[in-house]
Amino acid sequence: MVEHDSFPTREAIVAELKYFKKQVESSLEKRFIYFIASRTRVRFKSNKQPRYTRLGSKLILNLEIGAKRKNKKIIVSVIDEQTGEPCRPVVQTTPEHITFKHASGKTVTYAVHDFLSHTKNDLEISSEIHYVGYTKNPNSRPINGSHAGLNDVLYSIPTEGRDIFVFYNLFKVLSCANNNKYNMNFVVANSMTDEVDVDTEGQLIEKTLLLYFNAKLQKRNKRKELAELRQTLKQLSQKLRLTSVTVSYALEQPDSYFRFMSSEIDPSYEHLFTCYLDRENVAIEQGSPINEAFGFQEV
Image 1 (tube, rainbow, N blue to C red):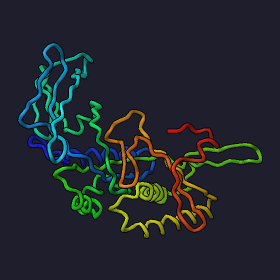
Image 2 (cartoon, helix red, strand yellow; image 1 turned 60 degrees about the vertical axis):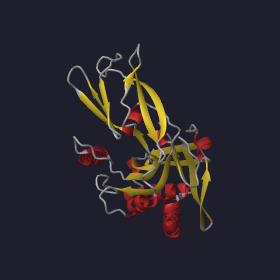
Image 3 (spheres, rainbow, N blue to C red; image 1 turned 120 degrees about the vertical axis):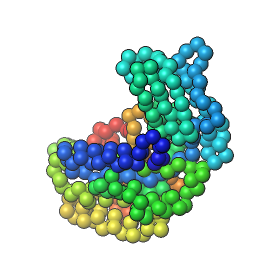
Image 4 (cartoon, helix red, strand yellow; image 1 turned 45 degrees about the vertical axis):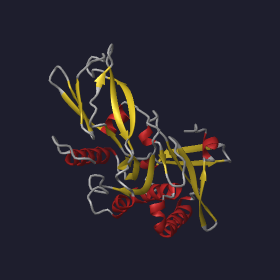
């Protein structure tokens, strides 16, 4: 988060997260899975203001990338949100923000990363995951300033060359079962049956993702996380005859901010893997055997 001179960015983010939490709680009980990640630092070039192309409404912007402030020029279209037509509002930038002042008097300000994500500008930068967690209260965890994982990331990652992000996710959890005798498959949302309680569901997703990305900063707690996941899988196997957990993470529309990677996982818009018990060991494998069995499409 970056504070802006003219409005309280932090307060706005907390208010929006409180709204998301309220909306989720009004329809179903869920836990938020969050990623603490970093990306190569990007700023608008402070000594070079934006300008329009001579014969159109294309906007030319100059960026500085990374600790060495490598120059990068991008060109974007400026479209009036009400009319859908090209327009040429007055544009001003600071290193962290861009402001559009329209003829109607309306002023709109974007943080640099919000703007780049909104305009789908791929700078060939991926988001490296350093920490996976889960919470009921996204408005306070992990951004309340006392979160050990966030503090570890802030301490370990050189912020002069990288920016830190928190990504919040909600997962749709399905229970899949087959009956070979009658050649029938069953797929039911866990929110309908509540076979797995909401906290166990959240912890199960958190720990499988944690082990999949296997981020360097979380390896010191890996033995503890493995033991807890092993115990959960055993209990669910005995109670529900659970054999595996498949996680499918993908976007309908590519956005480089959500092209995730880690110290051991290559950058990708799509992550599909299966977690299961192999005797007494927790195993993680790329892909999913249930996709073909249940007729699911690959992400």
